[in-house]
Image (cartoon, rainbow, N blue to C red):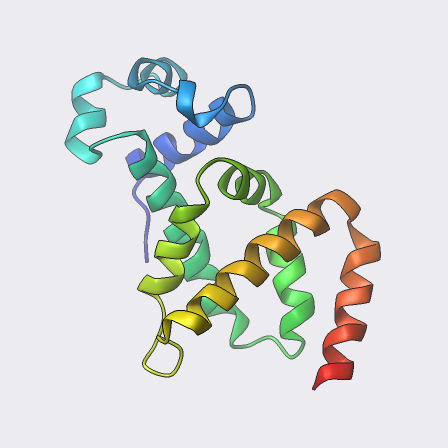
Length: 151
């Protein structure tokens, strides 16, 4: 998945705005001002503000899924990868978590497309990452120990 410069500009701009104000208060005008891009360009690429988050999270989740395949310690990679995008994780879990669930469904394969399994992945993803972003390394080490025990 490749993200164009226009999409990247909108994604980055919205992430910056969401550090200052909640998603419910963000307008297209805010995004246009932050990104220095016209209203026409916005509507040519997106229907609404949440569409930007959908594209953003889709991109990072897709990248995570592709890159993790080559990692020997996937749990450590999970934390390291999302640590680099903790602002996005906090925004998504606190303001529009349904986008996360939709992306998980989008990338579910035949083996994990069961709705209960998807709910479990979603719950683990949002809970672990939101708690971890508050407590950093301490929780990462505890999670690694826990997952070794339940294997």
